[in-house]
Length: 325
Image: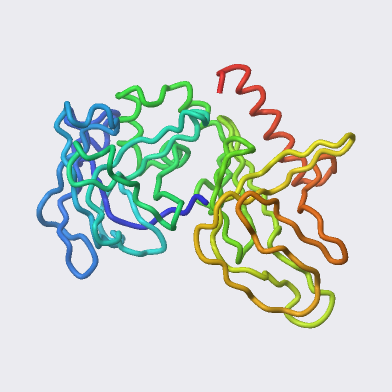
């Protein structure tokens, strides 16, 4: 689930803050050293010359260590990357920023990630910095495009051909009233795996090149008919899951299948109000009161939730027709 993120910085020099391009050698991390969990003016970090993993060795990209870097609320920075919930970057956060684009997802799904490695020659054997298990720290392309503080990153992506101007223009057209920072699992294809927290509601951000629709489900919640608390979530833990389409004319439904258990599942005991079967890899989410059956959301209803999912599916079908992915 996408979670953004609060605070070490990479800064374009003030000379270029007002311009439309980057310095010739990329953008330089602001000169900070660690003091009491924050970075303050001190020794400079190496510049970010490229976000393309295939070019890092040839252009001499250096790795940098931002371990323990904390919020930069008092410093005038332009381009800034951050961890989450005002927490410092964890120990061992040494590596490089890079642009990740899944070959199985549309270009709008691109992300800036941080690859942990001692040198760029070890990039392929490194690992991505995680926020939680299975959920890499990232700056979504949507945020890069819509936020002025990522102006330098956007320019570098364009200059290196990692994104094109047509894609940027499409993303810029997404309604300004839609928050690009609200938490939730970012979905670009209906069967795309995502991380879900069993102890809360499931908020999903259905993305296309030109739209973002936010839908909240409650598949892990039971509603008690009597006695407090009214809402009960029987389990705690993180899982990897995906949606599946189920068609049985005239009904079309969205179901949820568990793929992997990421953290141990613990139980919240309660009395009455139905039952949810404990998640197991490969199985559908199953629940019920008198009779157990797969959890499902009907796509044939006229509710706002069903409409938004239908619109998302229709737009993705048109995108695949036009762009091939």
